[in-house]
Image (cartoon, rainbow, N blue to C red; front, side, top):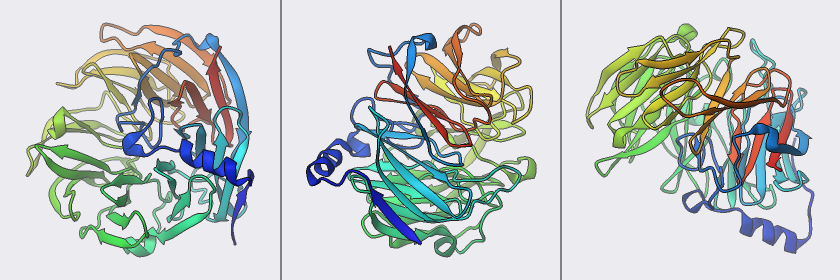
Length: 409
């Protein structure tokens, strides 16, 4: 059973909502319209109202969006995320970012897949123009009208890729590029943005992965980086042909950290639950530059600011630490122990960490030592979802679906 529940019916309101949703390639200043932020580097501009002192933030609104790990995305005055009711359905939510009022909901049948965790959707929505793209835990890709929540098209990744359902479900957020919607899960597939028709699927099938593809340019040529359970592939941007492959080992062959492309497409940072590696790319082959066990992103993403990579080293339930690593050689600049497992983003020159115990912590991005600015308990565990900073507001959620929007006072 599928349904779209519009909560603000007047046509004029819908028209205004549509106008407020901006294109990903022409995002308004301050938007966080897709996974890893406006530029795909996990960083947002601070803006004039940003304060790194978390005591100066108030709870603007709260909502419950159901079980899962989907992050919030922000476009104009709308915020979107996805959750599961722990019975039979996932729901895509669209909120008024200022008030927290639900603008619309789109629900559909989907599996919970509680394998070694409570389950629920992994992928984060992507807003592009007047559309929002989502991916369910069991591989249903949706293109929805961003103003009304009505379905434009639907595709099935299991069928399109010709693969089995991954052990922990699908986790790839949609990547929009040149009229295509790109997903990855051991294979990479591109769909027509307007119709959902499968355009191509990569030929080589590798062990399932739980990462998002990265489209990048190197010397004027477009490529796609895709990390799976066995290694990193670089594909042509045109048709998904593989041109380079680099093996990468992880415990249980489980990788869930999106690659970070650096140095104008000449380097790619990859990380897993046992190690990390910086890999060089010359347009034809991949070569290891450095490898380290001092930084391990199990299911989280690090952030690079000023030539230093900041990330949480460890895994859930472990005495994780926050580590600052030199991008050039992988050497640790400093490490802060007893730092509960979580994830990090960059806001201007501030690192914002969100631990699995629900603490927000702001840290000065500095290579000469750990410099904590403030910390604040905002939710209870378990928080594995990245925080988001969009249009002067901070969004956090836990796996039970408790969502909080913070605004500066």
